[in-house]
Image (cartoon, helix red, strand yellow):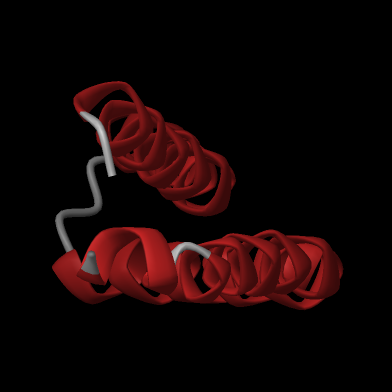
Length: 89
């Protein structure tokens, strides 16, 4: 395997990682900000509210996008297994 192929494999890894974790992290951040603003406006300082809302939001997005995200991971894994012959040489 030459350096260009190795860099392409790592770039595909980073793309897949960002594609899979990006929506989940974005939803968790948005939920945290929204709950933080609401808690500030209502002066409720309970940490468990923010945690529960984030968990529910991430689970909802995971359920909605799970098959697409899983497909991306499986495709990358298959591509990696297909490259084993070149990596071992």
